[in-house]
Image (cartoon, rainbow, N blue to C red; front, side, top):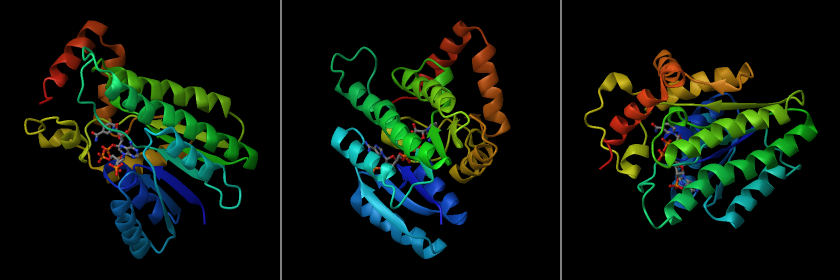
Length: 255
Ligand SMILES: NC(=O)c1ccc[n+]([C@@H]2O[C@H](COP(=O)([O-])OP(=O)(O)OC[C@H]3O[C@@H](n4cnc5c(N)ncnc54)[C@H](OP(=O)(O)O)[C@@H]3O)[C@@H](O)[C@H]2O)c1
């Protein structure tokens, strides 16, 4: 059975990837900080889908923990066929805050860990001549929202670079750019969502179905759903002053 490693596999988009990949017959390795929640997710997934689920508690803001996950990706006895670099969160801080620790942590989790784990998976998969890497960026990558947009822009551009370095090796890289998805993300980041109409939201399972279909086709950039494709088109082709205005409006939903 192929095995997938998913960071942030206990909640929201990562949990939906875990469910979707288990449904496809993948054994799983779940990575997150909360060990109790990891155990509960593993028990439920193996009961429901009859797959083997390993848990790997790790804080991806801590370098030694990231290296532990990288070592699991490099393990040749029990190879990982698919990596989903998904763990992440919205930032509470603004670019004007004097204390940059929260920014540094977010860069560690959403940029450096993605780089280290993508490299570890890419090297191991390249040697075997096959594998898939899926990185979760955001439509925010095309916007100008505080520290989050530059972080997700990094994930987007990094993924295209990694896809180039792995081109022709049998290893594919897909970066997915979601818009608003119903998860714990907004509550954790203190983002008000009460004013956001229902039709804006996409369920995590749908995002995962469409992303996996794009990854199967070896698409490098995946923008699921028509509404997100339209949003990307507008963000890419509207004047940057309009994109900055829209970003200011969106940032008002922060508490
Ligand atoms: N929801 C959206 O609208 C949306 C839109 C675009 C992009 N995204 C991106 O989608 C990804 C998943 O977000 P989500 O919406 O599914 O959020 P979520 O429901 O809050 O899930 C986040 C997951 O990441 C894990 N995590 C957070 N910090 C971690 C750390 N330092 N080390 C290890 N694991 C960590 C969490 O587990 P623990 O707390 O136990 O560590 C949890 O499993 C993120 O990269 C986010 O930026 C989300």
